[in-house]
Image 1: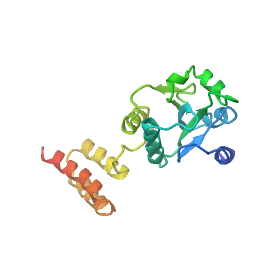
Image 2: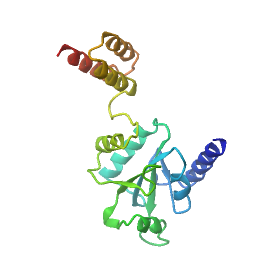
Image 3: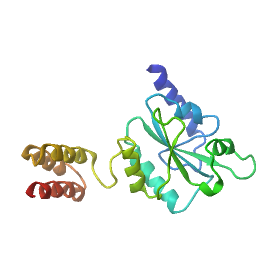
Image 4: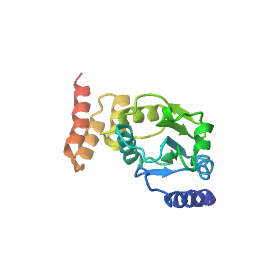
Amino acid sequence: MASSVGTVILVIVASLLGVEGTAQGALKLDNYTFSKVTSLPGWSFFVKFDQSYAYGEKEDEFKLLCKHAHQVPSFMMAEVPVQEYGDKENDDLRDQFKLTKEDFPAYFLINEASPAGLRYTGNVKADLLVTWLRRQKIPIPSLGTIDELDQLAQKFIKEGAADAVLEEARKVAEDIPDKKSGHLHQNHAEDQGEG
């Protein structure tokens, strides 16, 4: 266990040495670090393959997902910038995943269940990416929600309109700085209880 933690720290520090052009919250992987990082036991990685210095709407959605995903234990966002010219850095990884530059950006979930990578092929919107990751058993909270209240909502649904769960949700909602988000959860739970 200690060597696994040490390996994670070493790989993260090594990855941070080349973060220029990488989305905040994402590890930059290359052909030297890719296999070492993505084969760490117990970890899942959502890896974006794209051109170096990507920009545009899809990149903005990826950045939003990176900010949102940092809170998920044993899960990391990562990206592999592929150079089209010059040294063609990471072109071998592009080839390994059978990608062309027209495929960019391409997204893969890599973990023990899918060591060769499970490709995401849907529209590139942060909320759709989150939904897909949740279907793959990544415990990432839905965008625009509060994880603790999401868990209470699941409990509320399982137990039926339980007053104790509703009261617990009210207490959690009172402690949330952004009251609007908390009340959305609480109001939805109350609406479900009335039916």
